[in-house]
Amino acid sequence: MKASKIIEIDEELCNGCGQCVIACHEGAIAIVNGKAKLVAEEVCDGLGACIGECPTGAIKLIEKPQTSSFLPCGCPSHQIKEFIPKNQPTGATEIPSSLSHWPVKLRLVPPSAKFLKGANLLICADCVAVAYPHLHTHLLPGKKILTGCPKFDPPELYWENLSEILHQAQPNGLEIAIMEVPCCKNLVKLLLDVRKTLSQKLPFKVYTISIDGRLKDIEEV
Image 1 (tube, helix red, strand yellow):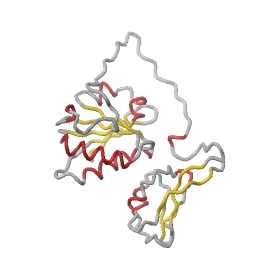
Image 2 (cartoon, rainbow, N blue to C red):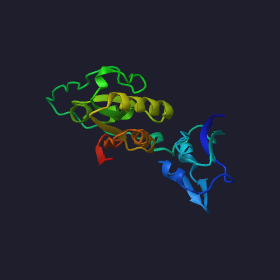
Image 3 (cartoon, rainbow, N blue to C red):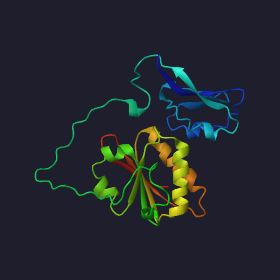
Image 4 (tube, rainbow, N blue to C red):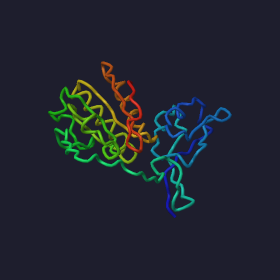
């Protein structure tokens, strides 16, 4: 039987502060009778974003056997959907790439890369490049892009890389593009945490893309 990672909360250690509730973008945790409870196991993504926010060490990751071989609900990224793509207009010209460097993966780009120095950075969730048709015309022009997935890559690796990049490269501007699914919000949280370590506040803009490829929201953070 397959096992999946899920959090476990020790009620004896929990002081009911609620920091884990704020950290859980999936809404899997709630305060019940003064204690944190995992109230929605099916949406817990097993990434453990809440663990680092717990001041008493009451939360840990465990492996739990799945009750079925396929769970259709839970995180929206697991919900299977199909769309009818919009037809490309007749006579449409080929859109040129706005990419100006290589590599692009956050975990591969060294913080010392010359193209990062003083650049306008676009931190982009992997799925955005597939879902959003206007990436090369709307979001990427004039920017250096770093892509990654906060669901499948180690958050501590991203924190370290982003911290070194922002400290060494001292970017001129910063934008982030994420999908509307809850797990993507961890990328924003990572950037907010890294920003706290900077000597000067670096404002950034968050673009949220819907799963059917629309620009859903723009927020200044």
